[in-house]
Length: 126
Image (cartoon, rainbow, N blue to C red):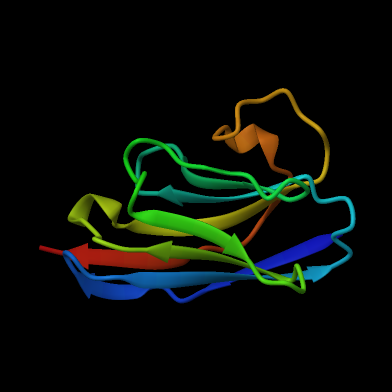
């Protein structure tokens, strides 16, 4: 059982930066992947960063490539999302997710992940 809790959201002007944190508690020995998703009202969750827990590889969609960076601390108890050059379209609720089962789903598919945090709001004003 894994519990995830996001923090670090807030309001920022376009061009600014925010760093989100996801605290991982419980037993996470089986973690295969972790990711950050965002969601706006009426839309599906959109993956913005994926971190392969064992290899350390990271992946991003074109919409955030070069602006967002996902990382993990050495204790493997925190996942971060550094967001730079923020745009108004980056506004949304950001969720941390973990997958503990090997899955053939695409990396940015929410179905790949079986644990989710409660989310943290990010608002970028123009």
